[in-house]
Image (cartoon, rainbow, N blue to C red):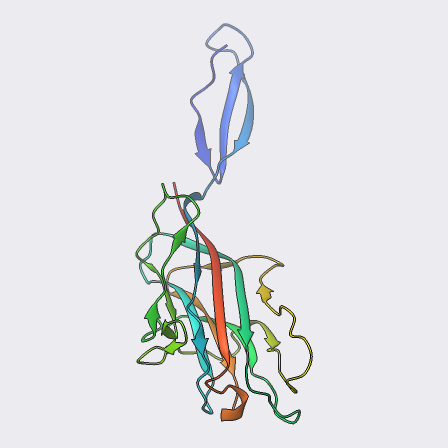
Length: 221
């Protein structure tokens, strides 16, 4: 028996079978889910080795942003942060607070961050931009990465590691964020990795940082 013409309503597709051979016989309908998002790109990006910026207003390490008018949704699935230090900090000096913060204004300055596709057959949207605060390994961007941080925009946060004495063994200390679930970036939304501190000694230029992003872009059918 032939399927009826399928129709898509509210995320489901209705189909069915005729109960008998006559055109007047009724239908037994059933529904199947309809995928409302199509993967258009999956990628990763990792920064250069970013020197700290000794100052009192914090430092934006890296950003990912989905531009206004974008035709894709971005699912930010993981953010990775690692750091290494060569100068000790006094026990009375706090390390920077690493904060992932939702932003809306397009970040500026810094250096473009290259995208690495999980599948070379897919192409990332030009609306999805990534920036970092280094122009080469160990070399700060000529103009510091800038991002407007709104109030009450913290997604997650963690204190950075701290070297108090130069004795002993330094273990791996990479932190991975968003393991509890991805963050969706709609047009004019992004995420900034922000080091929040108020003293120059909390993030000297001898501190080195790296940031990585993993994300998926979706289009609608």
